Length: 467
DNA sequence: AGCACA
Image 1 (spheres, rainbow, N blue to C red):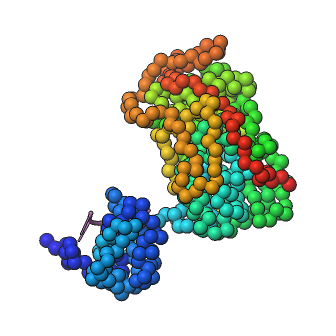
Image 2: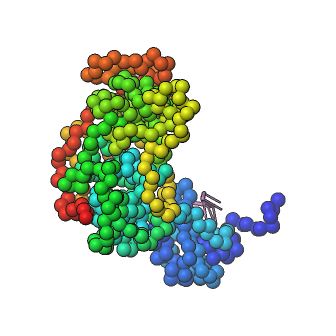
Image 3: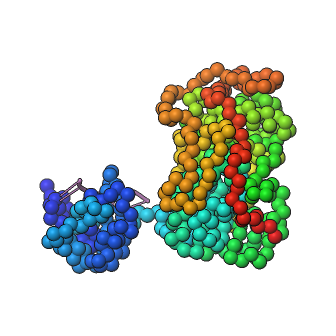
């Protein structure tokens, strides 16, 4: 039966201004396609790396005759069309236009939208961001903000080329550890293009900078905010202790409930409040103790450990900037154990744990692709940080790939391991965490305190912008 | 080496 009257013989397509190209290099770029095709006419759209082998592509000419030109040229040419020495087979596409499935974030521009995964806002100072991205060219402006997707930054370069070079080199990589606070274990950058072309920075502050205008007024409130991180001489945030722990959970194969966290963290003292939230596909939590000492003990004992056997729900702990959480007393994502049951009803529903994000107009939330499941940056004690050479660009191994914590990332037991609970080391306080009936936690990783690598001297210059 | 997927 002929379907829809559209006769599609395998080898005789009707002409189309869209050409289908085969046998391309798997990593063929749009630029290479354009190089090949532009002698025949104006290219209005491309789509490369198509198909299971990524070796097909589509090119759309402005005009049908241009496509016909190209096909007929190579039909009679003795020299086949080639890309990097590979013969490229060209035919008319059976469609008449390329559907542009480029998500907005893939449309190149001079402003990058950077999502920094696995950190609390403020863990990565704006100066560190500036330093990292300045390796690729002059950074004009930076604005940072916190949205549902997580901690994000808009970074404005003067031109698209510089921006795309930075994106190529840094997307999916991690900021060198020596530029990060000690407690940050993984910090992946997800980079897409913003639709912005010129950011409107009103003030120099801890959230935003305009490097083209050093005389821009300093926002008085923003700079002296209580939440402003303590920044060392190298622009690197020091980590003030706090009674509130910030937990970033990795490899979330199983749900971690408030009760589970309470069970785990109560081993070290009274847990006052808990809040669980999702950022950028990552589960994070804040756990509040009455004092810093308990928090420190819990942090030391639990850092890097997994709630479930098999490397699941691995905890990364740091001190939060918060000291007193404002959470709903009883919800599925939060708990306030300091509130007597009787007054629960009277509790107002105030769940704002985080400060209000600054006003930024529709920064595209980038492709929120969490690299869930990949163990990252196992702390390797004593390992000096690899030197970060800004001159290595273009997909080179500018950033060291993190040593993986779980070799092979084995897909081990599908069911949660009801493993034996492990007593937190060095604590006289005895555990009460098995009795609740919640899943106990176990330690499947050797305890490795992450030692601050003294190694790399931070790159010079780039003094923090203080007003 | 034979048509993409928002």
